[in-house]
Amino acid sequence: MATPAPLWVFADQLGPHVHSSDETKDREVVIVESARALGRRRGHRQKAHLLLSGMRHLADELGDRATHLKTDTYREALEKVGRPVVVHQPTSRRAEAFVAAMAEEGLVAEVLPTPTFALSREDFAEWAGNRTSFVMENFYRDQRRRFEVLMDGKDPEGGTWNLDAENREKPPKKQETLGVPEPWWPTEDEIDEQVRRDLDGMDVQWSGTDGPRRFAVTADEAQQALTTFVDTRLSTFGPYEDAVMAADWTMSHSLLSVPFNLGVLHPLDAARAAEKAYRDGDAPLASVEGFVRQILGWREYVWHLYWHLDESYIDKNEMGADTPLPPWFASLDAEEVTAACLSDALAGVHDRGWVHHIPRLMILGNHALQQGYDPRALTRWFTEHFVDGYEWVMPVNVVGMSQHADGGIIATKPYASGGAYIDRMTDYCKGCAYDPKKRLGEDACPFTAGYWAFTHRHRDLLSSNMRTRRAVSSMDRLKDLDDVLEQEKKRTSF
Image 1 (cartoon, rainbow, N blue to C red):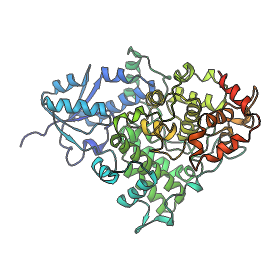
Image 2 (image 1 turned 30 degrees about the horizontal axis):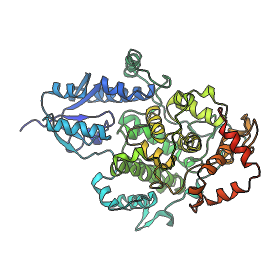
Image 3 (image 1 turned 90 degrees about the horizontal axis):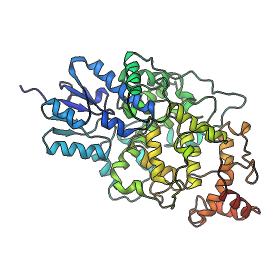
Image 4 (image 1 turned 60 degrees about the vertical axis):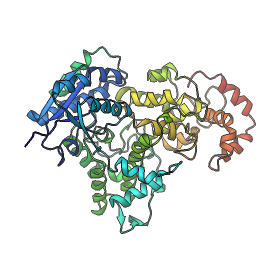
């Protein structure tokens, strides 16, 4: 019997469902570190560490089965293999085009469907059909039905599909932290130390700073992280998933986005582990449903829309935003920012390449939306500086959800808010130099004043949307609107 073709795995395809399925378990596994590809990524230092650590840990785990190549380019590595390889569908258009070119040259023998998501690209294309707008809630419900997660026969468990209304608790008062058990933390080893030495020696200007590895990069580590989350943190995840506490950056979040995006944790495994906790009486339905919605709903939805929407989607700019990213934002310089919420969010990105979804959407994204930052540049910023940021992750999240630059294909309204929302859902405002209740003066909150400037700039768009027309009516009743607008025109500090 002929020896099967080697399996080439990308750095985000490192899990056993990739290399040890029925179709791949007997194959040699080719793992390639391309210096050119890594240098082209640039971005956050800790993201580069996670990618290299994941690949090297897999090579160590597979032993003689792995062929671990360190080359300048992927082409050079494939030529060294000496025979055509098989590969799963990559996770970016650039990589897909490269694989297609290698197939034409005979270096790639077969491209297999991606095994790192629950729904196949073909099944999504069938679901999408001729739709021109996409409602995530409809997709999410179909995912629940298709994979029979949190279902009671044909009905949703508990009789309700979406329990979001139960998951909007403010930060608990008189507490600096949520007071839940810590997440699982990895233990670094010699592989991580060598990665650190190698990164130190590379001529690449990384963003952020080096730091301890905080995320799982192997299947075993991912399972430990998932188990710790489900057993000790899932119950409190739901109620406080939209809250932010300055002294508790993890709160009850799972920290599983990195292992998901490295392909070492399968979304269905995580969803079913959470569901089991509910069935066993160990976690409330609202928390479990919120978690399942994130991974089987939003994450899969974002992945499939990356491929389904036209490649030009990233260039959409229906709000006409063209302000360049300011130097302090581009460089993650939290010291240049006065607003406590914005400064802390930037510091989180600088120090660890990660903040959870509310700082991303309602602090960083909200600020960028109000200031009219160029959405394509902002998408690149999120992709480069977040440890879980990939080419497929950020366009829908930033262009669509955060910046409303697609004209409403993804979200029904712009996610703009003033300081009142931040004051309600975070604990930043009490010690901040700015007052969230003030829109005028030296201590006027840049989010509060910025919200009214944004509303005025886009009044036609907002007044035609049922979900935002009230904001325009409220703005028209402001007696000091002209002064606020003049103040915000001259604002240079935040």
